[in-house]
Length: 326
Length: 286
Image (cartoon, rainbow over all chains, first blue to last red; front, side, top):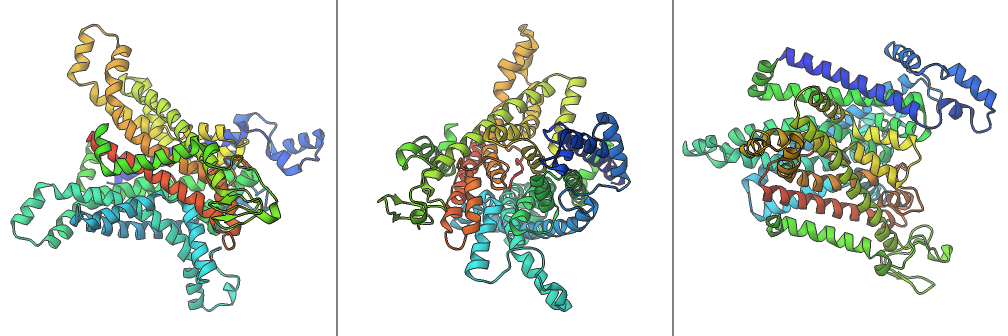
């Protein structure tokens, strides 16, 4: 198990290094450079040359790459061209917000999805099954930013019940600890609901298939033959078996969930990595783009690693395969 | 293939997609014509659905902030969405099939490198890459097709790789080889046609995915640029008028959901008809 984790972690590091290198090369291959961005359209050719020299952009690419890599590794991620703040501080403040949002929605959507899938499998080929199937297909098809806007229109503008922007109100510093917690929850409600609804659709579709597969297994017949009740067979035998592929999908769906979070964060001005990335990309804020890309890749890789570990813990067969191939 | 059409899901999916395709192709006939046409802006902007404006024109889905007809823009936007979705998927399938077939058929370092590249590219966060690429170059529909194709071929490559690997051990391959057929002829004429069935399923699901991603990029201002109508930039333009003109943002979103549901249902029906339980193609979109 430890060996497997070490190997996966190493692969993850290679992926992160690859993403960072690719981003670096792409930024340099693209038209326009940070000096033009920094000095504006009125800069003369001499000023641009001086700016490029000051930023080290006139050096050969491999030299630039290595020196950037060294600085990045030491934790010097540069300063944002748009805000003047250190890129590292911007992302250090942003990643917990994204992790919180993605993690909570992951737990909620898989819990709900498994429950819906179980109901569908138990009521296979009935009207309940069909209705829930239509609902989950529709949920999966929803664009996150559009669902977010619709929820804002309903809950913020029409019902005036929930806030639509940010992670905290303007008066958060004046609030007591309970009121602050409640304020945080109210701000979390809409972005979390958006991500969770979409995720629930995907999880339910998959859970239904996994449960139906498990229902056909001989051990289910054996359990029924022993005289166990339908509910008991479903919960103790089928559900446990069906959880394994669902956990595997959980790992695979993390990048998708994270992508969803990018758009949802942009809609709700949620102060996470996705919003930092979108704003930096729109402003061509190179140092922040580099840092945000590295942090996003890291979050995805760490998530995948966690899912691998959980699959190994849930399913002894996965552990056995890993140990044989190691 | 026809088995999928006996499936209720296949019928509904196909009907949805056909409906949207016909509206897109016949856009000049079923709408008022020019998607950017605006009459007297002050008098015609933000008209509610089904109202008649001062020029005597009925707007079935209302008008936007410039007095442009939402239904007309929706139909012309469908052209962009469908074209981008289908073209980028064709690109993904072409690249993915080539790489997957080569990596699955020939052994040695080429296969190792190609498999490694595929696994690596699969691990990259697609949306991050798309945002980056779209922001660096001047965005337009052609670029979006290229970007979506270039970041969407990996699942196809994986699928084809697995299929070709499995098929190359089958007797008909040995038969073709013992008749003296050269390796690439065996691959092209005998193995690939058999390997492509699951690719069709992946492609049906992938088109929906690509359409969602195009809309997402356009929504963020990194895809199709206004005034060219795209469902994504239409939602973006309706964002600020959710209170007094909710129909501007609602209509394109509903269209997106219908098209993606259509692709998913058709993909599901095809998969079950083929009887191939392919791995769930992850929803890399929104």
